[in-house]
Length: 182
Image (tube, rainbow, N blue to C red; front, side):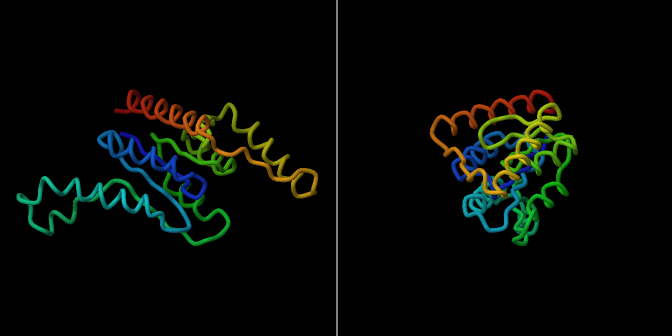
């Protein structure tokens, strides 16, 4: 079994929906799935409630209410204080191997890779010890250019192709973890 760690603040809703569907479909392979955000995410909250209810439903006639309440989803949502790196810090604190993370945040990705996780960004690129230093250096360089007014912030929007690339990369990574750790 393995765990998944998701920087929910930086993951678009369509991406979260894909991840949640896969987690619910292949839940037997997942130790835990952790979503960290500075706000309640209704889609994640609903997934947790639905999953908990579906786990309890077949046992309603065989367990008493107290035992039934102990059965809970292995999807968790952590609401952290609004502030710089609060969700990042929570994910780093929770992270464990085997596991992988999903984030757009390059400094967070670097911290998670240091802890032994594989990281997937929101565009479907896998970040590893081999390529994170270059991405971090590029990010820091661009940040300094933006701060000095040389470059305006331009992020490529998510089109269907980008969403499909993420979905394909996520499925591949998930399947690789199933083969390796389950």
